[in-house]
Image 1 (cartoon, rainbow, N blue to C red):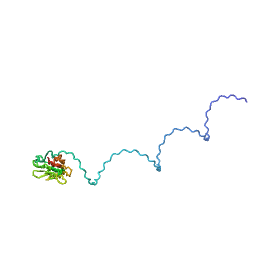
Image 2 (cartoon, one colour):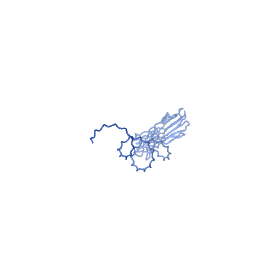
Image 3 (cartoon, one colour):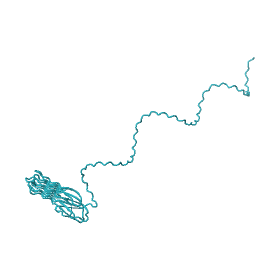
Image 4 (cartoon, rainbow, N blue to C red):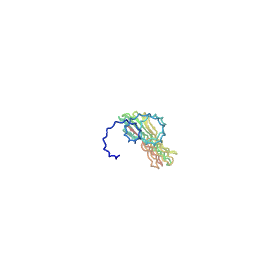
Length: 314
């Protein structure tokens, strides 16, 4: 046979034939590689809460923390009710008298006028029509000092006059009678006599009733082993008015050998007692009102007591 000739041109494709009967399914092939992760789908709705589990056992407490800063102070609470009064304590001892206070202002009926007299100058006082209530102060006159003793030693000093102050309801236009001592004379008989005693001071109301009186001081002695000082004036308050203040005069000083006999002071802050003499001089009369006279020494006489005084506040 000869050599094959050159193939001819490919003819046109014929029409497809009818499909053949499918063959049996072959065995699965090996798995291919995993594809890329797809886009996440929309989340599903939240499921219902499950039943809570049982509470676990309490853990061990932690260490106590540091104390915090104190808080601001709260507002004060309302005061509590007052408690019942306690049993009163025992009364304490009386303290010393304090200083005198300042003089208060005059009240509607307080006295604003003063009448004053000393010794023999005192006679009467007539209350004005406007006088209602007030006070009367009286000082007794002082006793005279005793003369020197024989041998020149000092006599005893005279006693001071007493003092009284009373409250008074005055009788309008009434006349009050005043008797006021002029003071006891000093003793003049060395070794024998004594100083003269004060005669005292008193005030009578318009009915002649004595409403207040203060006695004079007693004269000092000028004899004896010890020349005794005169006693101070005692005090008397008479009539219906009450005593406001009353103090006795001080006694004169007694004078043993070589000692000077000073007079006693009047009560109520009245006159001071006179000094006892040194030698034949240098003694003194009692101070006004109501001071007792000083005693004499050497060959000297005693010194006179001072006159009494009346002061009326109306």
